Length: 437
Length: 125
Image (cartoon, rainbow over all chains, first blue to last red; front, side, top):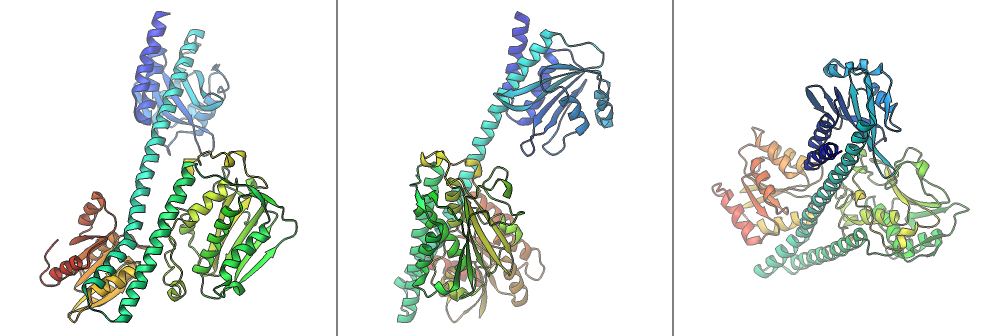
């Protein structure tokens, strides 16, 4: 008993000392070897993308091979190990192992396999596999030892995962600050530059006026950038609240479009509300902000006067192949549509490559300025956070956003909302940081 | 008369730099991104390129690298105008072959002096 405790203690020290996934995988396999006499040890971990366990490390007699994320060995081997994955068990002599590539020769000789699940609560994280050349079954004691090691491995894997998540969050925060400061410096450059020029040079009244109007434009931009940054920070930190009430989407569209009535733009818009659109429970101010952003982009990124169509429907308006953002399954099948709105313009469109990036903070379309810059001159340029915020707000309602676009032909931005937002939205739970674009 | 190519995706910044350099001894031409900048630089052979770093299509560092490895433009001095403040950016600018870096926001007087020193003898900053 004392020897067993000592062996498990030693394996714990080994396993918890590892700071990188590779070291940890090696340490786990080496611990298998020190706890039980084996000729083969393998570590399988469940892959995030498809939930399949793939081999991450393999120890055969003298050497340990650690596999990167992309180069897991044969599926046949995984299947062999999986056949016994439900509970610790001794597998029959396996034929699939004989199909291993020659580089893993040692593994071919295993005739007895034991696999122990690595499980955190109800979540399957992977498998620990031990194998022997001779047909000597593993004793109950040995099975227990490997179970103990599997528990240690589980904790160590979780520790490493948390460390990586924290490091990744730190990196993202740093990058965000760097980009945000870049965006703040740009309008500041104009403010400092033009004001110093005005103070140091004698220029005509017209020039003075044009410089002052640029100073004004850039101050407005700086102001809206700061407001958007604060908005986004509030959303990310979970301090924002949704104030829910019944919302009629048709009315919402009319309210947003009335903002453009003053510029004589109202005639550009056509609104099509399909019958049967339910009243939603939502935050009308936040939805106004979301739709206002989509409509504003449609106006800014298409030539003056070109038509903009707004559709409201009691179902999802995205094409079946369109990827919904912010949904676990990321497809139309899991679309939460109680209702949806789509804003379609005939503007410059977005390349496929850029479509993946439009919702990232500070993204701006490359060709905005080329396309009729005169038309946009009066519209203060957004800080590049509008779509990021809009998407977060929709996700907070339990909905999802999507984009469809064809360069040169136009873009459609849409969002789907469930009839009721999920409960967490009203009590201020932080958004999933993993969704940060 | 010397020619200065101003490259920035922000029209306001191009207007500003234009105003700063305005005078009888300097002619300015403009580009809105790295690709356009290389194209114009190759055809018009400016005496100095003022290059923004963060731009769509092609960023300033890449454009600088391309210019410096193109025989027809390799000797044209390139001054990076950057709003990216961190140390690694300065290092990347150096690696891209830039002849100098001016930090945004800048004072018009400083930019003018730096540009003049390049146009009148190619002093490195």
